[in-house]
Image (cartoon, rainbow, N blue to C red; front, side, top):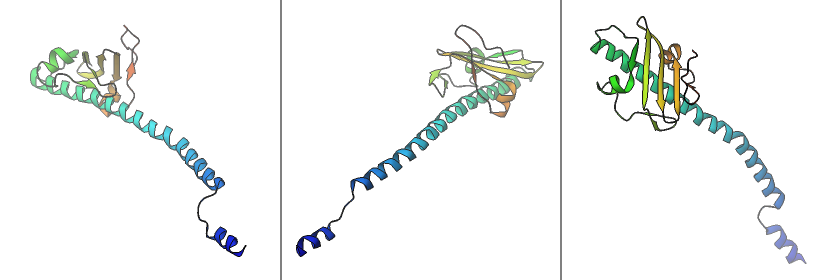
Length: 151
């Protein structure tokens, strides 16, 4: 009997209750962390898209300065002017979707940026001038076959 009691005291390990407590704590941490991490991923995709709009705008500014003698036209086309004149690389993509930008335009009114519009096979996206210049904001997607017109 004495030997049996001594063996029980020397037993090491975790009880079922202790293991369940650890599992519950890990589940609570995961429930909090996963949505937060997914939010960060979505926000970074959105920020990279906005950076692409800003890059297109900056390319159009260089194009206007070099090719149009500083006088901004009402419209600068992404593919036929910026890509052709090598102010943007061919095969540029919208970072969040990895879809090729098939068309786009940078619109000016009296030499002041109005908006930037980029099109992929998924749709047409537009960002207003304030958001493009500041590299902030959220791109707006137009309905299929329509162009986004709101600022």
